[in-house]
Length: 165
Image 1 (cartoon, one colour):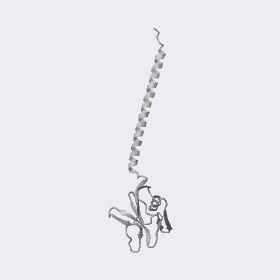
Image 2: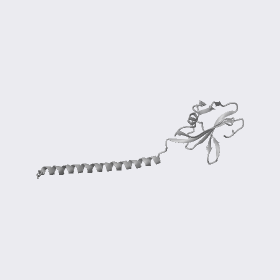
Image 3: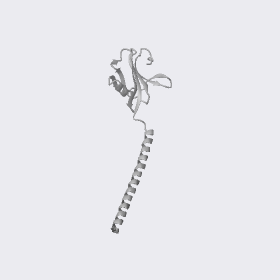
Image 4: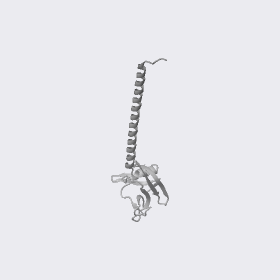
């Protein structure tokens, strides 16, 4: 039986110690990464709860003077869009309008232009009053809000106020 020289045992112990140290270091490194990941995940979840989404859903009604109605329900649009943006988008650009210093005046929608005493007016649905309210601004100045229900109506203006959609 041969005896191994003592320097082999020392080398083996040294290799085991180095391997154990590396293994312990890697384990601590991975645990640190896990803590960072958990922290970042929590921060992203908190941020997602506090930040407004970048889109919103709105609905648009277009009612022509012959009582034909076209609904564009739950249309997803970017935050910051105006009623004019929505109208152009929903109707594939088939909207005629004139630009004045005070804003935009819509003259035709879906190939139907104003005529005689009939002009395009926009309305917004007031959920508290359960009624249509005549638009307070130009279509290019009204910034959409989440859940808005809006309408364009080719209304007869021979009597005022015109009928509601």
